[in-house]
Length: 199
Image (cartoon, rainbow, N blue to C red; front, side, top):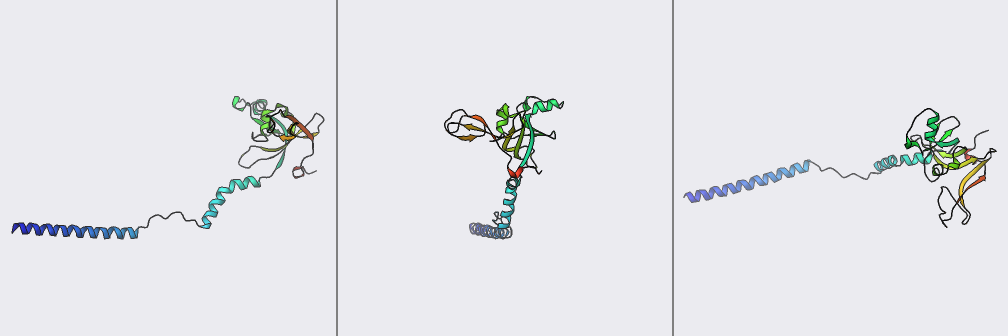
């Protein structure tokens, strides 16, 4: 008799456990139905346009930056600061800057064109006209064309020239083609019309 009772109790316990598991699974399913998983980022055209517009904004600003004429002398920053009574250390020793006619010091970017001022002392401490761009948020001058003046005040367009290959270059290095030495070339030339100052 007692064995039958205990067997019956086991069956009841198993049925109860099974019932609880079933109810629990239904409860979890209901919760899962109510709680939606986070959606993956949708590729809506409006959002894409907004993000692309924000990403490309600096590039657009660069494209819209106007080419301007900057005149003065290119000097080394440390020397220019020393003349103004400002002491600086050797980190500024090789930084080339344009000292404008108004006395402003504009640092020059040592890129494909501006690098010549860092390499070639013949281009410094003499009057120059630079066709360049300067972005609003960055005070650095990105030089596009270099014009230097001789002792008589004649304007010349400046580049470097390989006499063997007849190709221009814009920094001091062996010729890109034949590896021969190149020379500083000055050609008498007027300013391009898009930057000529108004009379």
